[in-house]
Image (cartoon, rainbow, N blue to C red; front, side):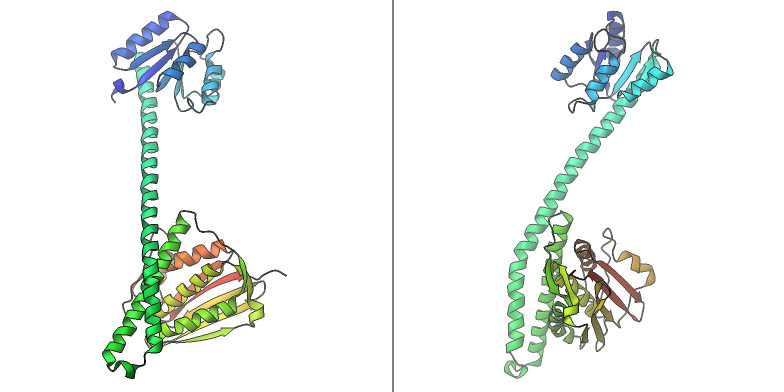
Length: 375
């Protein structure tokens, strides 16, 4: 440790003690300043940066214990370590020293080597704390910059991707195969439409995930019928599923029994993500069952596929934000791993819960439950 980087304040009303300590510490390279009482010590602290205080207790006026209490209650000085260096050596004095904010306690007469070991220890702790604080500030800046960059990218890409998605949807609705004349052109158009749907979904998830992680995503609760909302999303995703010749079966309790009070956009995104995953992991030509069921005080939404399922040892990874676990679909579709994490986050914001069961080779059922609207 380079002692020359640190300044120690000696506070003692006996000049001989001050001179002896000052000489010893300066020989070791430490910067030293002195004060003969608590008032002088406070004046020093307000004008000079101090790293450590060697503090006597028995002084006229404000004694060392009282000064320590003042310093530990002041935001400007509370982080400065204090070593009591005093003739007091009763157990009660030692305990009081620590209670008043002291970091260490040495009784006079002291051993020179012991004093330096304790000073070195306190300065090491101080430097470690300062390093952690600097790194924390740097990390916070880096995270803030990263989140801002992600937000800009997601926002700037979302609008053109949305326009492109709408364009392909309209083209597919208005153009019949015989109008194009070439089967491979129609297939390319369908592939382009499916790709833009996937990219738009990825960007939408990314934007929402960033907002949730930086605490800017808040739920705006409104009354809706979950059965009605789910049916609309299923109708849209039936076109996406048709590219793998997958049929989506929809069933719901009476619509009036599925009323919930939630953030509509969040729940719609949750349904979209669960349906998208079901399609991704379903085999070509299979079926997906979507059920909205009113049961007790809750309304349940379930998506069941009969696809490849999830290995038991991988299931715990699905909702672990630190992993962002993802696998390829039955036709090598890729994913970001954000979908389920986002659904789980949305359930928390809407007082709901997400749960699932899966068996490798047989398929999966992903469900969420929301409280019914009261009254």
